[in-house]
Amino acid sequence: MSTATEHGARAALRQIIGSSRPVSWVNTAYPFAAAYVMVGGIGAVGITELVVGALYFLVPYNLLMYGLNDVWDYESDLRNPRKGGIEGVVLSRRWHRLTVWSAVVTNLPFLAYLVVVGDATSTAVLAVSIFAVVAYSAPRLRFKERPVLDSATSSTHFVSPAVFGIALAGGELTAPVLAALTGFFCWGMASQAFGAVQDVEADREAGLGSVATWLGAARTVRAAMVGYVLGGLALLATGWPGMLAALLVVPYVVSIAPFRDLDDADCERAHAGWSRFLWLNIVTGFLVTQLLIWIALR
Image (tube, rainbow, N blue to C red):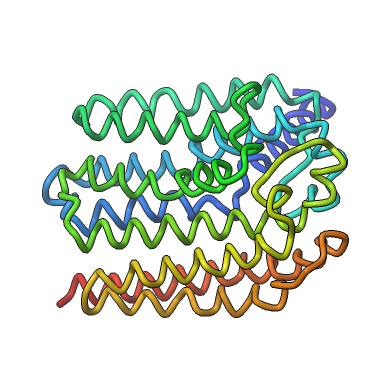
């Protein structure tokens, strides 16, 4: 392999991996694995399904979700100052076709396996999950540009792996499980809405819609605060000690509260809150893990 070819291959790999948002991989793999294990999946189905499912939601799923988004949103990404770092690459047009093929090729074997080892219910959940991933940014559908639906679809990206884990393991949607999923869904909607605040002006200039361009910066922040609170209230219904997870929404509310009166013209100031959000997720994930271990050992 020539030096030029080797450099090209490395550049392509960096771009493709970068487009899958490595910083977010755990956000989809963890909900699946945690839900699968907590409902007894290892004993009910097997360790192989856990490993394959976790690997799928770790990388291929994120490549499908974010890689296709980077292809379809290329023009707007060029104008987005946040692109190019931890929050995603500007995917060179040179690698668009390769990224699409990589997403398809890496997803199909995993999806085929998960359909074969699953049942009608788990397959239906998986289909909804994949549809939400594609519909979020696909031309014509563009759920990401439909206010409120954008937040609901984005939340589905992270909650559906957990629902799939429960379905694959043959678990039941008991009242505590439904309460936990509802709390997680409210958290996801609130997080997406707040994330959209920093792009209000840029999205309007580009003719793009979102819950934040619809409500405006200040009202979107307040709506996100309400979403976090509702998520916490839902978690209270999980019973002891799961209800302790309700406390984990407090830092999110406190973190975004300073932006509750943010003017649309100053929307980019919300990026500081979004940066905190990314770090909060790491701490929250650790604390949730400790809580789940406690519940499992009781």
